[in-house]
View 1: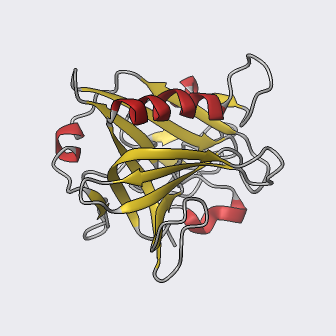
View 2 (view 1 turned 30 degrees about the vertical axis):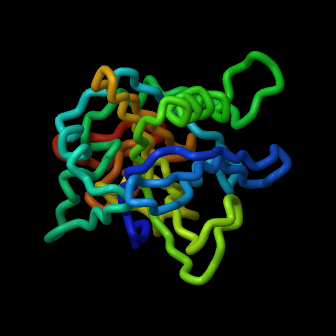
Length: 235
């Protein structure tokens, strides 16, 4: 089944915490607080459970016809369920929305001990700038809520947050159950002073951008629309 509780959270960044490089599945954690005082966590993968590095692209500025509808969202978390089999119009889909050229995504290591770019460094650059300037962040992904439990990273209660802040289709066999269309994650920042958007999109190097109507990877020789997949579907 697709990822549960696909949503977008509109909030301000309050703090950042990063798992150590020794963690087998390190994440970049952002404490969020919306204008209605709802606290939550954004947990962004720096590496995968299966040992796959992430690919990333930063679009600055980012232009999309849905930005106006995102600014109409209520503070806090808004569920974006599919209706009658169709994704919510405000949802993200890397394979179908023409958000960016997948070939321009670059594989990036989670951490760096030198001047080489790292995913932590990219996230620091934009998230900490948004934090310092009090700019709104829009986090797309799968949400959780654990009533009666404190958040393990930032100690607020109840524990709530967003994970799967990355592509959520075209997975390999191990995570095929998470595939779906219109449910991709992403991190978008609205820079209010000049009405500019910055978008950070992430995908695991093992994921495919050529997917069927269920978000599953198309094998070589299969067709989607009028296009035939030639060779490996993995970008």
